[in-house]
Image (cartoon, rainbow, N blue to C red; front, side, top):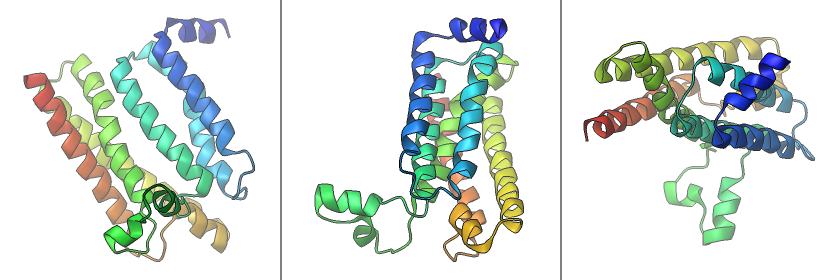
Length: 211
């Protein structure tokens, strides 16, 4: 525990705040949880990240900017876990705020929140991945390639894990967890969104370093 406390205290204040706010977000997401049968599957990984973050960041420090990107991703994931992704009511929120739903604007009835989070995974992973690669001696372009490769590999591993998990779950719970919504190409589209986000952010990071 002393080592954990020392790791926590070694973090910049802003990073400690982000970890604490993420923990609060997970707690709030489970107040009157509307989908208690699958909510733990979504939130347990976040709890594990919160618990491990001080040790990880003490061992492999990241800039507060890179941590902020990761924090944004986990917040989006926590919101998705609240509603099991497929039921995030962003259409209702948009209608209440602007008088028109995003579904009407895009001409679709599918809930695309999962696509947004996969895109966000690609975007938000690149700054941290490139920082770690650069610290190991990689040049900017090599670090960008390694970051994109990490996103591609992590996305594929996640989709395989999701498939394996749903094989052992009951039908209704499996569908609620994986959010396929009847799309047989859901996994491939999710990976494509992550890659798109990673490639776009890698380009931004390379341009930022060249400026």
